[in-house]
Amino acid sequence: MKKTLQFFLIGICIFTSYQNVQAQTSVTVNGAANWLGYANVFQTDGTTWAFGSSWALPDLKTTLTASTNTLKLQPNFNAYANATSAADLAYWTNGAGLGNKIFEGNTYVENASLAGQIVTFTGNVTNHNLASGYTAVAFIKGLNPANNYSTDFSVTLPLTTTGAFSLSTVTAIPAGLLVQYGFTVKGLNGNPANETALGNVTVVGTTPPPTPVNVTFKVDMTQQTGFTTPYVSGTFNNWSGDANPMTDANADGVWEATIAILPGTHEYKFSRDNWAGSEQLASGTSCTITSNGFTNRTLVVANQNLVQPTVCWASCAACTTTNPVTEPMTAAPTPTIPAANVISMFSNAYTNVPVDTWQTTWSSGVLTNIQIQGNDTKKYTNLDFVGVETVTSQINATNMLFLHVDAWTPNMTTFRVKLVDFGANAAFGGGDDVNHELIFTPTLSAWNSYHIPLSNFTNLVTKGHIAQLIFSGLPVGAGTLFVDNVYFTTAALSNQSFDMAKISMFPNPTSNMLTITSANKMDAITVYSVVGQEVMNVNVNADNTVLNVSGLQDGIYLVKVISEGKVSTSKFIKQ
Image (cartoon, rainbow, N blue to C red; front, side):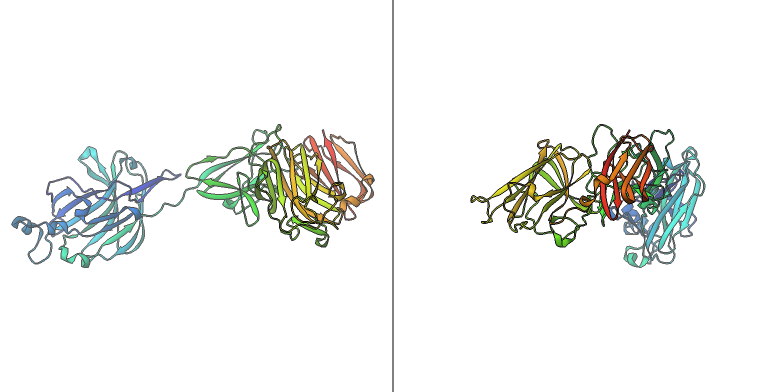
């Protein structure tokens, strides 16, 4: 127990600080900070100062629980308990079981770097049952090292009840001062026998409110047409279609927007013209998350400004003119053939028959089940060949006329489809197995709808025990293939009954105007890019129309014409 004369109190408390965007600083109780303690001792009149000295936290009767950032502040009992000599007993006790000095215990942290700033000290009092005659105060002080550590700045706040508190300097603490902030418990030094009755004040740190940071978004729109302004829409702006417009200051086709966003995990996507359109993102890709049938971009914001890399519209990567699009942005077409005419192996449009596996153990490729626009899709990568088996429940396709497969690939120049029938013994081998394989050249980076007459599988002389469907192609071991809507059916596609000879488009190629004529009245025309993005949609109600395609980028486009409920699809070249 020290009586060495020191100059002024230093209290002890551990806090943490954070800088907000207005250069103000908030501090609160923090179990990881550097605690200090100081005691001022007065005569029983409470004003006649006897001495001041640094004291350890346990001697002050301050208890720190670092894991919960909690301080328990009590009256001092150390002075009374250690008074054993006659002189100490006379100094610290009154001979009748009570203390003999007013003890001011200060618990604090000091930080010279806070000088020159507006400081706010916050916390939450979770317990306050100090006995009468004892006070607890929160403080922020500035001590002057150039003037023997005089207290040149001070604000205080009495703690009288439970609940949150906030103490601010209001103005900046003068530069050059040593800043201390913490708590004072003052009252008669206590008899340890009365510890419970004298009570305590328990204070816990508060978490500073999160501060928004600036996040810059960039989207490359050089491959998009038919828009005025892109927007950023997400959880941080309640999915607004017009709150955060993007700009292209240098007219390079890359649009940007900087938005103040709170730290955390967010979802968003790029939209255009107040939700006139939006990105259609593929599920399972590197920058997306799929929840409740919706696929959006995902973003984790930390406590610092962030500049997102430039990405292509509806892609996780930058735009490129040399590499094909690697992921379909739209789902495969939804089948419209009545379910009564279908045996479906895989399609959201039908009830599927049992399939043992979509990737046999002898396959060479990797299967991932994904969703595109909420539609279940099979994705194969590193593909050489993959076996799909229905050995347990073999398919009787004897009365079926077509096999349908929707396939999308960015790089497979050859796509093969094989059917295997195990024959009457319904087992592999035995001399009655038959199979046939067909070879196709798919359109890259677009959905290919293969509605294949089963008669084309010429070696498949029996179809009552279909047990295997095998996909393969080139390049060997490097193919990427998306598959949907695999089914057998008795029905031809509706657009096969459309007389393609009755539709004409000219000039083709074209640079400005495309004339479309039909022997029948056309209801609607929709133009798609080769990646399936809708770029134009017009209602016609006539047997001819002229489309202005001058705003489209050069390339190949698909034209879907609807006439009398039937559909035809043709291609034209914009140059």
